[in-house]
Image (tube, rainbow, N blue to C red; front, side, top):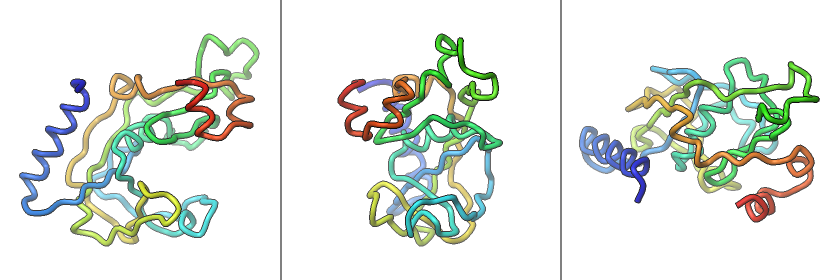
Amino acid sequence: MDNKYLKYKMKYLQLKKQIGGNVDIKYHGSPFKLTEIKTHTPRGDDDFNTQTGIYLTSNKIQAMLYSMARDKKRINKGWSIYKSYLFLVKEHWDEKYWNDTPVEKRYKLNDKGYLHSVNCSKYKCEQNPYLETEYIVKNNIIPDEITTITIDDIKDNIIYITKNDFKTMTNEDLIKKYL
């Protein structure tokens, strides 16, 4: 078991002890440190992901990855998260491949992001019927804990891929090819 996993397991157990009773922890990743997370209407592509609310995940690594890739101005493109991996199009994200990439299409991960832990037993967390790790809460929430995330926390979960593969391959095929 690696140290990163143990560190987060210990935080989970501390949070569980602090809150007491049964806890159902979900996570919200953001480039912003939010003492209150407010509802918003996303640019979704199905009936679940177009609802106004706060989106959470049961996958802590996904929330951590999101907090580092989703930039504050929502300009970054050429990235996706699947399972516990962040796929980055190397022509946009890796400096070694920037030779022919216009400056406005060169992206960087955030210096830090924030993992917001939320006890869903205090809120009505509805599960996405299309994605078992995704949940929504339809009112503002106060996180139980906020953890700062850095590149060191996620570097083992980043996979650089080609632009062509990003556009043409399924997530499962990307994992098979790059892992």
